[in-house]
Length: 387
Ligand SMILES: Cc1cc2nc3c(=O)[nH]c(=O)nc-3n(C[C@H](O)[C@H](O)[C@H](O)COP(=O)(O)OP(=O)(O)OC[C@H]3O[C@@H](n4cnc5c(N)ncnc54)[C@H](O)[C@@H]3O)c2cc1C
Image (cartoon, rainbow, N blue to C red; front, side):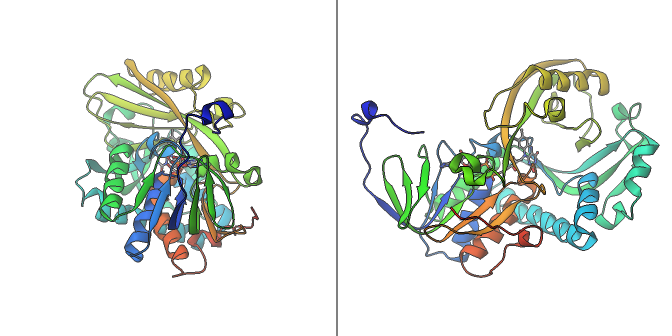
């Protein structure tokens, strides 16, 4: 956001600042990059620049599934990239969860629940379609649960589920707060309420100052095209809507659930609270963009799922949305970009950023620190852009 001439008279212009590495974007990925960079190079001066507050983007608005991904996601990876690369990604995601558990969740006593994620199946056709085409879910550690093993409220609608774990149910804002505290202890500087406008030879221009920096990391996820329209071809912002409802006690479904044909994901968030998101395909075109709003068609779709598919009576507690950054191949982009100064980008998590984010921050930090020359994600797509 810019400031008009008239308001500017009342706004103090901050003197120029300087840092070694400036990370733009205070979401889970920007904070994770700062965490690992401060681990690898403790003497480096690291600054995070966030236009609102940490977690204002998707990172503070998501469903809190820290997962490796659904069985259908892995099938699509095998189809698109082959088994070896799909397994590489699976291991990367598993490592991301164990790293965040060790470094943040357990260390800082963040409340979380270790659980499994379950991809639900409603028909034999759906099951045989998944198992066709040389895809073997067991090779990815997915375990088949028969209908008799499903929680009782799900037995009338579903035939079984592929489960995977350990995975985590978290409140994403708690996770970000602990990550942020750990950064403060390490001397990482955070500038909030300040928007980056452009990268120039000396650093980054904001509304009121120039922040001189030796290196810059852009971690803008769905907001990349806002920063410069050169990103339009690479990353598309898409809205994701959520609904939180109060339900009666006794609906005992402990996992994180994906229902792929219905395009929904849901979980309990307390004894009487259910969170549900998805149904984006009910208005695919309308859900393109980075304006955070809710729409009746998607919200009604989510409500209908709760009553018809889960058979629950409910009272609405909250409705909200967030912006995801989608790449064409639906995997993140990470690498060096051609810019007036040494600049890296990481983003386009396509709905998987909480699962992949912590390890992706490590991968990016290793790149910025010069410990490697290519991001892990380079095997899927190289970054080729000039700013
Ligand atoms: C409703 C919803 C549910 C989801 N559920 C899940 C889930 O359960 N599990 C999962 O793995 N993923 C989920 N996701 C996706 C996940 O939240 C994202 O992939 C992840 O948060 C991406 O993190 P990030 O740091 O890259 O992006 P963001 O959190 O979007 O961070 C980008 C930051 O950049 C800032 N910014 C933008 N432009 C500028 C600028 N010019 N100057 C300074 N700062 C700027 C923004 O304010 C923002 O804080 C969900 C997403 C949504 C929206």
